[in-house]
Image (spheres, rainbow, N blue to C red):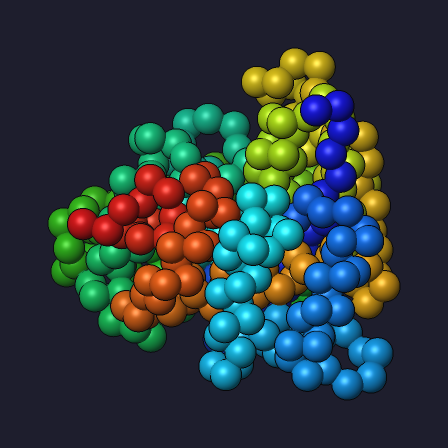
Length: 336
């Protein structure tokens, strides 16, 4: 195939601190490949099924009401025109923060903000240990504070950030390293105690160059993975995306450059164009898919897997989603 155009939207983006109070624990980025006319017809069909009135845009919460479950099953099923033409990258925001933190501080390799965290075989087991055993070891309130301090360590673009994120983080690490905890968790905390020079250098580089790709922005690795997925099927790829402030021209160039240097020589990302979702039915469909995926993933994390929808949704999920085991939804992360 010579060219593919995809439309993208996301669900769960809340800006700022990924793990702050009230923020979604799941970020979902969805993409669909469908012609404009077919997308318009599908949106009109969904609006009729929903019972939509007027011309306003309907977002994913409308289709997620319990009484509309048959519509969700149909949309994801074999009779829908997006069947086989959709892709979803999922991010567990808590695991994202922990994995990125350890990749930077203990990974011993350069870390780029457009690359998914948690892929380093050296640091992934450490991130999983913190993810699984951190809260049971330290209690919910103290662990939540640690997550927030971890997310703030490499953020530089928010005026509400504390003025001393590095000292605050390492004060917490020091105290937690001296607190009784699960052995693997305490081992990681002990290792983190000596990493302050790395954190200070990384933070200084981002402060000196505000255009550097941020490390705590999940939409960037999600789009990067989306480009690699669809780009593997085509020589050239273009993207329609709902407006997203994190996707600056410099960051899009970085994603395009990374793709051009990837495993698909001669394949190119030719354009990323931002559109108003209210006027673009393809992006509206991506919003529906992202919203469904986020809801189903969040319920699975709570121990309430929806196996009927997971059966339909599972083939759409990126196997490099930023996810911790166990999972019946993300490929390669089977429950055990």
